[in-house]
Every structure is written in C-alpha cells, then in structure tokens.
Amino acid sequence: MSKRNIIEILTIIFLILIANFTFAQTKEFRETTVDSLTFVNNRNSVNNLNTDFYVKKTFTKKNIQIPYRLLKPKNNSSDQKYPLIITFHNSTRIGNDNENQLEPFAKIWLRPEIYNKYQCYVIAPQFSKRSSNYKQNIDGIQISKPSEDVFALLELIKNIEEEYPNIDKNRIYLIGYSMGASTAQNLLNISPNKFAAIVSVAAIPDFSNLKKISKKNIWLIHGEKDDENPYMGSLELFNKLFLNKNLTFTTFSNLNHNNIVIPFLITEEIPKWLFEKHK
Image (cartoon, rainbow, N blue to C red; front, side, top):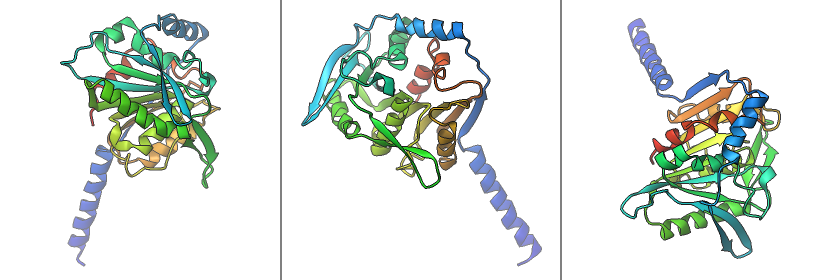
C-alpha cells in the first residue's frame, strides 16, 4: 500500500472519529452551591403548594395494588393533545397512604407558572415496597433491577391513555429522583419505544437494554459528592451510551444526594427540556 493510500485511509478514519465526537452526547459541569437557606426556601416553595388538584386513584392487577395521584391539564380540552409525565418517588416515600409520593418533582407541576405554561397529565404512583433493587455487577458498579410492580405500570399507563385519548402518545416522559430515578430507568429499559424522554436524578443505573435506549432522549443529573447513590454509576452509563447524541449528562460538582434536586425546584428547566422532546 502506498504512502498516499495510507494517508487517505487515516484521513477518513479521523473524519469519522470527528463526526462521532461532534454528534455524540453532551457533558456539562455546574458549580452550583446550595446553602441551608436556599435549601429550605426552595423546598418550601413546592411543599406549600395545594395538592388537591392531584386526584387520588388506585390501580389493581391481581395481587398488585398501586395507589397513584393524577393531575390533569389546567385547561383540559378534548381538541388538544397533552404530554403525559410519570414521576417516581424515592425510597423514603414508600407506603400506601397515596400522599407521601408527592415529593418535589411531583409538586413542581403545580407551581402556577408551570401549571399554566406546561399543561400536561401527571401520574405519581406510590410503591408499598422498593420499586428498584440494587446489586453490584461484575465490574463493581451498582446496578438497578425493577420490582414486579414496575412491570404492572405499563398496564396502568395503557389504562390512562384509553381513559384520556387526548394524551399525546409521542410525548410520554419519565422523571425520578434516587430510587425513583432508578425506577424511571428501569421502565425505559423495559419498554424503550413507549417513552419520549427521561430525566434521571441521582440514580443507580440500569444497563439491561443499552442498545435499545442508545438513541433515546436522556438527561442524567448527578452530584459529584453523592455518597449514597455513587456518581460513578451515572458516569458509567454516560460512557456506555457514548454515541447517543440525545444524551445530556449534568454533573453538579458541589452537590450531594440530599440537595441535588434543590436547583430545579424554582425554575422551569426540567419542564422546558421535556416538552421539547418527541419520539
């Protein structure tokens, strides 16, 4: 092979690599800090919201019973299509009172400016036991596995779609924090074609269906100082989905497991990002 041919081949390889880097996923670092006053004020801004708009319902399938809350669009019209959000709670909210699962990521949709501007259906299920369980894989990375109840959620979603035909099936979104983020990832891996996008905050990752989620709209958010659900898990998922141009990984260098959600409670950043995504 001539020197010229070698140079041409190397040039082509270089251009391919450049193209892959250009269209690969996004990684960003934020230096946000959260002091005690900001922590209290931001949480209170959503915790003080009236949750009566979230109607109490219960889904039953054989021996599985899942209490859930349903929020409808403010100006619900049969002539308009609306996204559907499914929001998942963390492990401290496990129970069956159909109240405690309304953690901050469920309540942000009640903020007046969000409720008016980003009209949608929201489902907030409550699990009576862990919805996602963790174990170490052969590489020493903690991974998450879904409970039986998570599989049943697909039927709940189907029932809601049938009851409310103005749900936009091309814009069904998942969001969760901690165990809830792991559960959101589990559901995305179980049925990747069902969902348009996911926001996963401080999750233990799910690597079970990487090929099928390799083009999905995914926003991973994690605090580098998280000592409960290790930051390394999200970093490993980011690396495994290296060529997914629809993946964003946001690292908060100064935040930990307990304050990672705080910056998002008084902004519209998450609703805005979700509403821009379609299947």
